[in-house]
Amino acid sequence: METPPPQAQPSGDDAWTDRLDVITSSARHGAGEVSVRRSIGELLGVVRELLKLEVVFVSELVDGQRVFRFVESGGLPTRVQPGLSAPLEQTICQRILDGRLPNLVLDVEAVRRTQGLPDSFEGMGTHIGVPVRHADGRLYGMLCGFNRTGTADLGEKDVRRLEVAANAAAQLLARAEGGEGGVWDPALL
Image: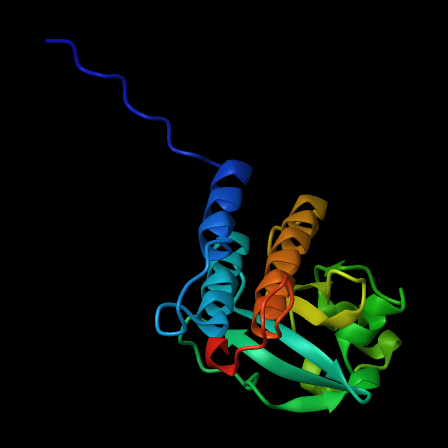
């Protein structure tokens, strides 16, 4: 009897895409089956794991503030918590949005003083971030990740991966807000 050949396991970008597809499945679920909060949490977990970051978050930009909405730290203690906010002008997010910093900063400590960042960024290692935009182009916030110390081995390919994840997060948020032809359902959050 002939043994069937082993099935190839997706690797690299294929594995990344497969995992995002599962999380952002377009199939409709009942409110008791899935929540956007859980799905975004799983998405952030995938991003944190694959990019080897300590903390990953989705923030919303509201009235000149960056508000953390979803945070994944793998259980590590962190000052970044859902609901906390800071003036947008004091954030790396604002500097990425207005072009003062690139999407990927390998050593935040090296640019902290010249960028006028507050002391809370002292000693920070790598930071990567991209905008989260609604389908109509409106800015929701940012999807970012960082390592508190040291640098991560990241490049432009990882920025592109984060952009894919930000698009997935925007789709999930749209579902909860009644976008994509749905009705707003607070139970999905």
